Image 1 (tube, rainbow, N blue to C red):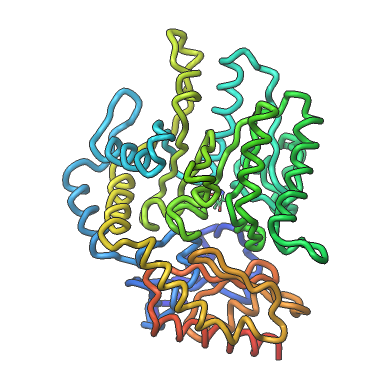
Image 2: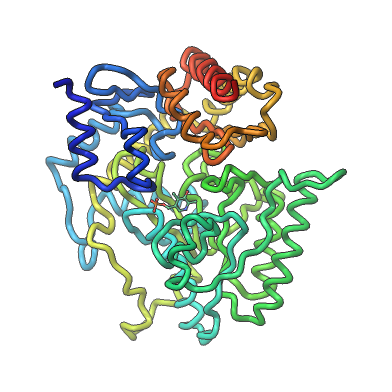
Length: 444
Ligand SMILES: *Cc1c(COP(=O)(O)O)cnc(C)c1O
């Protein structure tokens, strides 16, 4: 028996796959992956697939990257794990120092967890607890954007505006108010992206006023709301949101779990909201996904002296007592340090600017395709919507792309590219041609 059918059958018998109605695997089974290198995934029979979505947006420098592998091998023989409560170690200290330096020292306190949803939970809990410690215990409300996605544990789900993920659990989660999205596609006649941002900010101000001082924080995905179809907005929204949060006494949580680590063209997305050389300062910054180069589960919430000081006290109960078993795992931190090394050694942010220009040109045929709408780009992230797409477009497009050796996984009628920062002229050409051919096949 060839390896793939056997592995698929065993997987369907024993593994409950994420984000999946398992019955649909009867028609479209999961794809077995035996090994991976660089941009490519290989199945047991040697078929290959270009990972154009970085394995759910995590992989930055290719699979089995030699530099990250070497760092991990060394760490494996030095210290694999130790609890972080009451103990510390070099990788977690170095990582905190370097992330803090990347924030210009403004976010100098790093609290770790293992996944994005946990980072959201931490930011929400810390925000309320900081207000409570400051004597403002009635600040228990949160605001999120229409179409927001911040993870799927119960707390994170309460600030996630995606009906298909939320509806079944509605009775279990807190009622959180959504405010208008600054999605640039919502521009009315004569409006530009900045106008949409201003209009959305007016809606935010209304919600803050109606919150009557009970809003603890606004949570946003800076520049791109990825999971709900790559809605992009002007950085002006972040500036206005920061100002409004200050005016009405709410924290600003920047969820850069998907858009951090260079994805939008700057190391952190919120850097693009700087004014007169002065950085926008979130109260909380959530990072995960790309942080370990796509190797190991790791997330972090970075925060300011001001928040940190609100917890610093003789009373244990005023501390932040949240914990996860694998908090600050040394292997994951070491993968993150190797990832930061690559950013520095290869001057990745500048190199990506050239890389993105090349791929944008290679996508011209797609951009000009008669059924393509709202072709858009932000840094190393491209997306477009397909007009009058057939039912079940996402799955059909995925299959058509896989037949052309490319992994693309549309969200609804939105196709997106989020490749590792390794895409070159040749692989970009291959990807663009396959993506166009797959579109023509599905629309035929
Ligand atoms: C993926 C994602 C999360 C959740 O991260 P998990 O590791 O999947 O829990 C939260 N926020 C944003 C913006 C994300 O893209």
